[in-house]
Length: 500
Image (cartoon, rainbow, N blue to C red; front, side, top):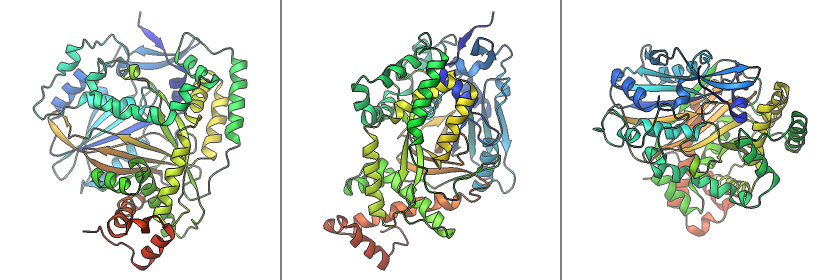
């Protein structure tokens, strides 16, 4: 008999969210310096990815629920593709290829993931990765990526780490302990847990009890009627949240997407700038992203003064002993990006204040509980939840901490990395900030009918950061304390290039 295991309620919710307009796929892109050996890549994936049992399983539905079932006909070649970009085969063609993949559903009759090795005309290669959100969240998949890659170019092909720790194809959802992925990574990723939700975890509230119950497949919360009542009450709370500003970023999405990413900028410069301004790296990056969105709307002739764009931000809810697990262990918090504020310094400080307010928020736990309950409830309940969130939200935004050292896959160095999580319901934009190898990039995925030219958003990201850098380098410290004075200086002498 084929082994099977129950799909968690939260993962079931992600399975049921698939829509032709918004597929529940996490999209990743790696760009290599040089050509990657396709056969060595295949061997690496076999040795290091397939020890996670979930990548050999199909999600099936029967009268007893939703189950992970081993694929009896699993064939690695069905999940590895090799593509050549059309002429001229550069960045633009790669972005179009990624957008097409984002709109292409994964085969539900097979394990829902695919790696596509793409040859670029400049002699380099790219790897476009698609993994269904039901398999794992973005935080877990960054750990998977780290397990696939090496810190040295001459590392052995087969993962000796997995062999040494006894990773087994019969261990569902694991590939050895956290040290397999680098403890530095998990310390970095788990930091938001203590920062954002520490106060919530300490109070032992009813919602936390529901969260723990959802985590235990053998401990159901209660019958459907009680779950339905809980969902209705929590949806009622969310319903009090006002809609954000109407912009061209909102609407009814279609099936054609657009993808763009910025050139890398220095993480060291971002850290130094944020420190000088009394803000975190996260505050600085979010404020720069808000400025890029504002600049794009203004260039289109839209009214932006006073506008607010609400983005849903994933918050990691993993405990240290969850570091080897796949699945979804995150909640969502709603952040209003102050795109209506013209002054870049005032915009930064407004972002900092809003992020500080979220640190004691119950939203992450609440939305995790809602997702789990929606996975247990009839489909129409989940539809109502999606409509509610999409109506009040413009985008999904992630800030992913990747490895801060150069990594190698199948003996080839990874020059750039990007990742996008899916947009649920009618949300038409995903914004991703990813740090890797001491550099940061902004990536945007949009619906063609809303934003046909997202490159014009990401190209403004570095400019917005440079405004803050310019303030630090050229303004007296007491001048920075007065945003209105800074605005006057910017109006008289706006920065057109990076200060030297």
